[in-house]
Image (cartoon, rainbow, N blue to C red):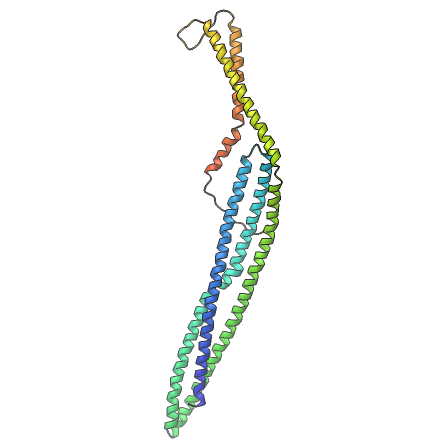
Length: 318
């Protein structure tokens, strides 16, 4: 075979090399995109749980009315925990825009490039057949037919060479683009993660300080004081009930049964009425004190039904 037949064969070898290269890029970029996308989705789930934790810490702090040090520590910790989730939200948005999105486009890019290479391979095979036929005509046909075949053969060689150069240029552009995108995406990924973890570490340190500064002994003493106070109120309440019970039995011995729900005494009724009124006021006062300490607990029960927690979306880093 003459030199003209070597061009299509060289182009065919080059096209197959390009085909294997594109397939390699498609496979590895697909794996990277899938893994980085999974990391981004996991960060979003962690953000949701972090928001939930901050919300629950704040609810606990709002409902705590005895341990004041714990209340203050939980409030500050909830605020710092919420700030971490703001930075995590910014991390997620940057990962999606600068890392996942550029790499995810290579699925379509590689499919398009593989189609172009397949088309070029088909053209090369057709050119090979044409060259073989022209070569036969050139060697066997005399005179004008020989000259025509020679001209057609040169034209086919030029077309084949141009097709090979076009494919080569396209692959150089493709390789340059994919190298730049890979480098930029991975560099952005590492930079984004470093920025987030640096800021998160700062706020986690604040959370740690908020929790460590809780004075357990002080809160325990306050609880003991409240506990003893609740016992004293119970004793006063029992004494009041005992006094009322004794007064009723005394009055019952000096009364006449009238068949009604009220009792009347002979003699000075004003003293008995005043005594009963005073006892009743003491009882009402004690009862009010007992329920007064539970008002905040009743008000905080509304949080128990708040199971439907929607995660807010932030606009960016603070």
